[in-house]
Figure 1 (tube, helix red, strand yellow):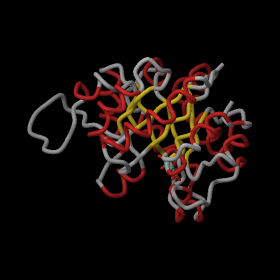
Figure 2 (spheres, helix red, strand yellow):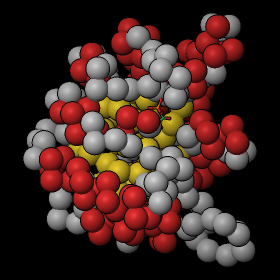
Figure 3 (cartoon, protein in one colour):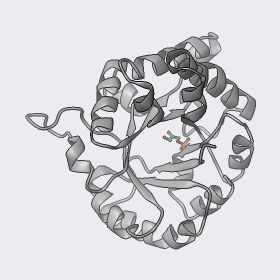
Figure 4 (cartoon, rainbow, N blue to C red):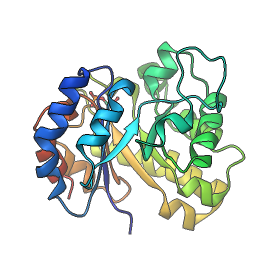
Length: 250
Ligand code: 13P
């Protein structure tokens, strides 16, 4: 069966000192929780400090982004081998990166290939806007994003990835998708797209998270859906209550 995975996307929050202090504050409690994978995704410059703080615990570390090239004149970017000493995961194609930093399906696909080549587990974000949702385009848009992300990938590569379905209208709004909405799209637009590309075994193997206003209060309901394997958590991952949220996932 698929092991649940809860990842905290800290986004652009916490200084280096705050990141390390927070990791130290909650790491022991998180380390006691069995049956769930746990990941911290701090701002890039805070990654080494957080990685050191969680060393020897079950907590994994992820970057929030990276570039697909190995090195060169790409001012402001980080190459895969710059994050691999500290990270096991990398979030790719988050809707905020797509909206504010011009990320495209094509670029996300290149980043996935680069991450896998460096043994990083990509957490690939997909999700529709409010306009697309209201126009009834969710299904086709999200499955299109999934298929574009996995272009030219083998089944083995695909199942090494994690997908996070994050409807944009649910991110940071407190307006979380209902369990039926989230689970329905995860099944019909995400898992079924993987089945179409790679067959049912791959579709059953890949882990798919929900993201968008996940809280201590609603995590348990999401996890009760057979197709939801965890959560990508923003705001609620920044506070000590994250420990209870993770406990709510098992
Ligand atoms: P919130 O949990 O703050 O809605 O953020 C979700 C998200 O974007 C995680 O990547």
